[in-house]
Length: 197
Image (cartoon, rainbow, N blue to C red):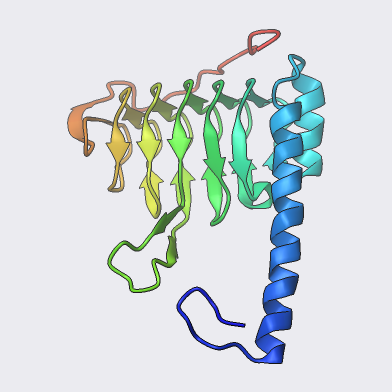
């Protein structure tokens, strides 16, 4: 038996690959179950399954309908945070989302990407940290190994490839600074999430 690069594998390497493949299939099955649960229009039912799946999530935070995940056990979501509908949260490396964070619809957060220059096209992982009081606009994309500072704003459709300092507003492709947030001492609460969303 050979691996994808053509290297011949020994018996121990083959058995390790079989075990990894079985674990991967089980995870993929559970992610499919979570995708189905993700369309149930009742927050507390979805929240229960997300927490059981390993997401470290405050009970007063909300994940709206249709959100998809990779490896939920590496995802932490703080208090009073709202994740919009049809977002993607990648947990293949650590993903930490702070308190009072508003993430709009269809935001994609990836902490894994392929190394396109590698002979093996291997994965390259990097944690993502999103600070308190951050707002991320619709259809923004956050790439691996990024820290978004407290109170920062990511404009709709932006592609974040660099760290964003506290209270700065970034937009564009790739994202760059386009402004600064005036309120440097936020203390608001996002409040109740929309029912049936």
